[in-house]
Length: 496
Image (cartoon, rainbow, N blue to C red):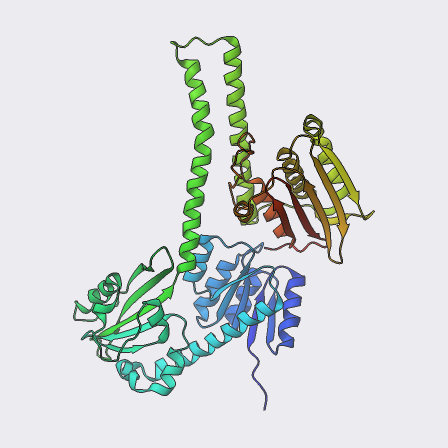
């Protein structure tokens, strides 16, 4: 007897990843078809119904959202995953709205991909069985509570909460997920349950029941079920018709959107932070200009020059911040143009040190270089690598103490070129270390109050390192110094 092999479509413009996933899944007894771009993915995905699809978000011709949309329109029960390194709130909402089962972050370990596909295939089987059952029992919707064996197997496996209420307000069907999502201990069949539900959800149901007749209109609401954002749900209430098109009851589907709400909150905090950071230099320059235009204030030539220099400093800071924000946006949207070539880290480090030689001499900092390999080179974009080391070395100097030391060591492992940058500077407190790579984060204490910066530099270099599938390790002790270890792979492993 031949065992059925789940059919998987892999759509990705990276040949190595595409072929690697194909080999892996075929070893796991999947039947795999690959597409090298979005156009081919749409063609294959709409000609044949696949059980599962793994779709790259960013492709040169058609993006993953469009591929997802076309496939789900033709075959709504194909379980689709979006594969990406950066998922913005907008793409997460759009992909979920169009029916994506979930995100698979790049680069993904084999076991994570296989686990996602196993769970997705279980969901696919449930959907197919449910659709088959729905067609068979279309005219008997409110009687399904008595078909316990087959129905419970299906309904209890659905991760979203499901609650069916008849036109008398009695519960006739529910699954365990709805108890957790509606924060209820239990529901009893034929119980008048509406009064026990959250008021906003009860209102959705009553809107439908109050009409007494069937109208094909659904109502949705996002509800905070537990305080401090611990549990957010999206509840959708839809009318259920009898075969004669009269109103039979209401079905409520409840989805956990807690993670999406957290993303939304982070986005709001980011916008607020950007507004605050931009406002400060603008207000300062505006104040200086008022001094020049106020005829009642007589400024000396020295004062005028001082205010102009201060304004220029503020505007330089503002311009750098705007450029950094644009760089972050370009990295997230994958619009950065790269020129991949052989880049020797030793040359980059020495060049950056020459750039900061004045500051090094001014603070009396001693610099030690140790290149353990004669060929410390990688395949990468020179500008990105130069920016990366400029930022780390700049911080090692800027946050160092007078007559301090900076040690830079470059070595090799089997897969990575490892650069260790160690300083004897201010260091970080444990709570500061956790936020180190967040946008606009700058350690604020008595030792850093006179040091300028946008708080975006480390966020940018973290994105650069991540885009090469590298990693950064940090060791720091407040008052003693900080050590960064930057791992960059020898081969380009660019994550979308």
